[in-house]
Length: 119
Image (cartoon, rainbow, N blue to C red):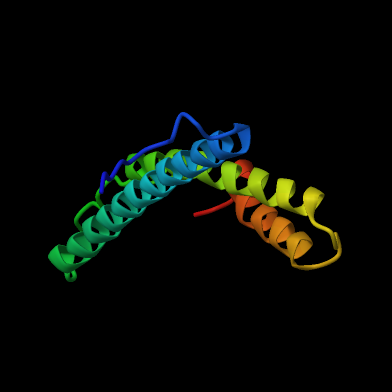
């Protein structure tokens, strides 16, 4: 029994599109993971700074760069998932069902990042 991985050249256009979507989802999840790691690093720096201060007037660590980097890493995956939710909503047999709710939820998650209103 031969075991192969990766896309099969004999697949039709739908199969190729599915592989493309799967690879985009994988990249998006990796970007989200890196953004999470950066955010956790920023939280750790803040916590360590507060522990070190303990009543002293020490300066807080500069974590703005970490937060901006995390935000920049999160934006493309959120935009991709919003686009995917819109495509699902457009192709849904019942446009008033859960596909519409998913599209609105994706928009509400993406909008604060695009407008720069998150902390």
